Image (spheres, rainbow, N blue to C red):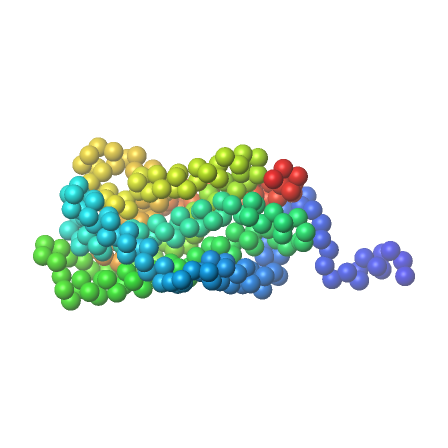
Length: 289
């Protein structure tokens, strides 16, 4: 059999990328079983050795909500736009936690999986995508907690507060997708940079925490406008997403087509750059990490 015939006997040909734009997304679908395996691994490995296990899904947002209510609601007296304080903070925390988890865990993909990447072939994007999907479990549980709190305040309302879900709920899948893609894009950029600049790893957690105070998690956008720095807060793409998320479930928030459109454009640009940089770095990161 000649070489020309041999070439047609192969079911799979593995070769290096020929350009930055040669992303071969078909491989992602072909390796979907591996994606599900990594999702299961992420979930089991994180909570297997904890005493309370998945209960941490509830404990963290509840504790954070109580702290925010005491510090920013009671001590600082920051307005919550006529919404119950606990409900206002929990909606912001729920959406922010999903975004920040996607970002921080994706930002260490190369470092955490160097041994696997150096030994066997599979589409490298499978790993960060598995992080985004596995975090949906935690987000779903915290979303149920938020809905339960909405039911509570519906039957036992706080004086001077009111809320009601809006038609914006139809955008809920879009908002979740935007949070995931924005966290994924930023994480891909950071993990690519940490292959050469490892100091960035130590700055990610602090930077994400600082970024949270630049969004409307702990205060409404109307408050920032009264203080004169609303424009700067609106430059953060997560601001439009959180405001739309809060408007969808509680009926109050600075939701406009411009704000959500801005978040969509910035998210797509960051995701595009993140995939390109990730694609370039994966070719030779084993030599530099």
